[in-house]
Image 1 (spheres, one colour):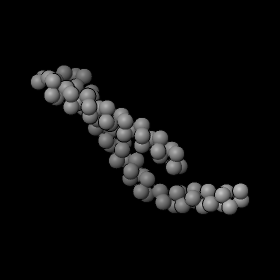
Image 2 (cartoon, rainbow, N blue to C red):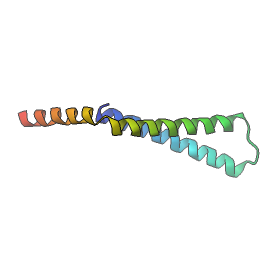
Image 3 (cartoon, rainbow, N blue to C red):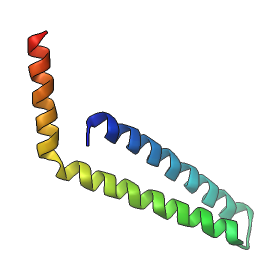
Length: 80
């Protein structure tokens, strides 16, 4: 995964998860009972947290790809 791809996905999933946390938190404070939409928001929040943890796991394990990308950048900068 390239650096730009990781950043894009990380920002996207972080925003998604933060939005879902705000929605679930607001509904917990303002309402006492839960309906189907609240459970969908809770599921979306859990999904966001899952994808964020997966992204961080992948980023930690793809060191050899990242090193290759850095080597290409250094070669390109050396040419210019």
